[in-house]
Length: 139
Length: 139
DNA sequence: ACATTACTACGACGACTTTCGTATGTCAAG
DNA sequence: CTTGACATACGAAAGTCGTCGTAGTAATGT
Image 1 (cartoon, chains in turn yellow, red, cyan, orange):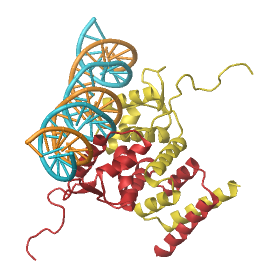
Image 2 (spheres, rainbow over the protein chains, first blue to last red):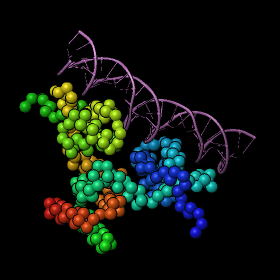
Image 3 (cartoon, each protein chain N blue to C red):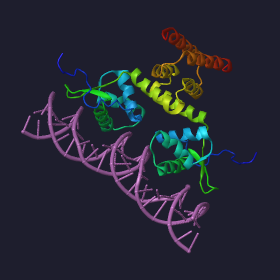
Image 4 (cartoon, helix red, strand yellow):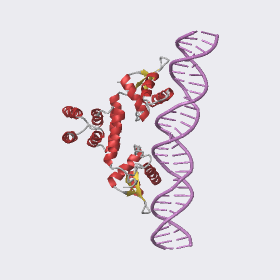
């Protein structure tokens, strides 16, 4: 064991910032589509909300600077992919909101979520299953 | 019944916007303290994060314009209170995040929240109780 | 070869956020 | 009345966000 830093952090390991609304829209595409070109991202985004190609491009460039996405520029049309898996980002966002608006109470967050969109019977049992699983793991 | 509008909405009933980070900090104080003066809000806020009095004041003024808070200016020191109860705003925020980042899946949101802060045994049973309650009500 | 199409880079604008300083008003001592 | 403590109003700086137009460059078709 020498003094190598296998760790990716050097100098200021500035944590990945919370994605903005527009950025989250793009990440959603990247997560479901995998590595894609700007064009593909744009097509998907523009299908739901009229948006210029360059708007998506610019946002992706900024996201690259922020470290939210990785870019492969070997091809002429650069290929982007999310720097973090969906679950990781979701955890950040949930944790952040939990902290900021719910004073850390998972129960309150659940109340908020459930009352926001009436949960189906199926969804409720799904949640119950999730709790079972957690209780088993967390010994 | 004449053409009166007892309703508070006139012309564009523009919905209350999502509070920003700084605004949420202030709302948190208002919720736990009830109607208070700027001074009281400031003292609470400044205890955790150095902030000028006028910063809090200005933010509260903006929040008044947005309809996030109500102001009573009968006294020289105006008294502010949240325009919406804590639960209502929490529901908005949870629903918003659920929609934007979790594709509407309450289960995913729960996974995110639970993995963000390891839930205690007590918290888990609290959640289970909540589900019971929901299942009983939602017939 | 040249026109057309497909990309990236980037500057810039308007709206919004957060922050603070300064101007100004009110009121109670002294 | 004047001063000092305490309020509100407000302009403005500095940063971020979302958006787009334009410029330039590489590939493709005719």
